[in-house]
Image (cartoon, rainbow, N blue to C red; front, top):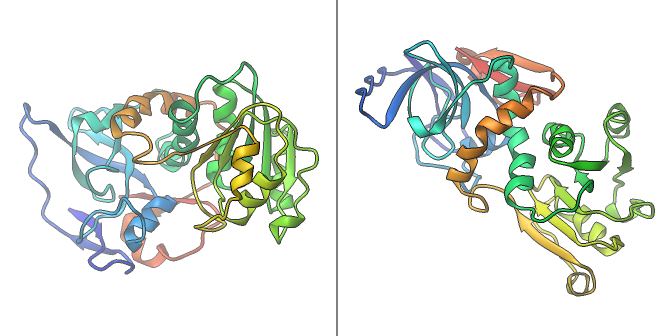
Length: 308
């Protein structure tokens, strides 16, 4: 069989031939699956570069999840976030890390979208608490794939008002029918106009850095705010003003492996897959796994999905 393989952090993955792993016995905790599709998510890139805190050891097989076929002919979603890589033609994975694949969902779309969807889903399900009915959500980084998918995700979980923040005006306008309001993020962040941002129950932040610092300075919500830090696309550090945390009713949490547990995540996979049925079909670039070395460093405007 063939697999993608990284032998040095940061190098372009190679497509190499390796021995097929032996099939687990029926009473094993593992199950053998044949890959159908696996997405090239940002976390996949970061782990292959050796920069993500959840990276494993070398040699490294890229990929954290995918859709696959069991020996019994059943489609499953599988996760290797806790155990290894997903971009191999044949993979042995723990049975507990597989989820039956629902009817009516495109495997390629699921491979592309589940990871970006789980960021907002897990933030809402495990990192926010006791939200009021018809709550309001601000999504910082709304034009990223994760941010875009977060819009229908938070609505499915009870949000009545969704506000998007992003730099790209054209991309924000393209989301106008999905968002109730939008705010253009300016450069520098201090030029951003937050004057019309009123009460906000939840902030999902894919940006961090200066935009978050300025938002906290300007936040005038009269209701308790639950802020969830998910990604750091605008900077790894944020110099928050202490007085903002004393003078405003803000609860700060993060969402990611460690903030939530893998058993929690596994328990939500089926719900996320079903939620994806109502998400608009996204443009996806399908690439043969054999070509991973050619496209790995390309800046694709759409999510790549590798297929055998």
